[in-house]
Length: 59
Picture: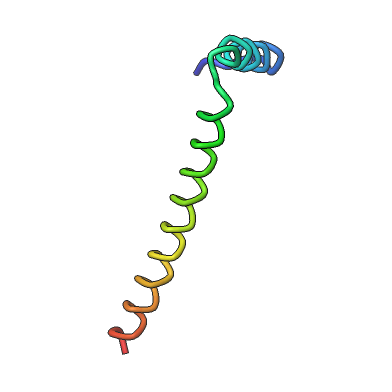
């Protein structure tokens, strides 16, 4: 099994983030955040509805 050291992992992640950062535009960032929030809310609501439906028909 290959083990990676923590500083190497942090350096790689930081370098990747800093290399992508200049290519991000603010409108893309906010659109991504908004779509992620909508996706999380829809996923949560649907899972709660399915849980309710399963519980109702299981009785």
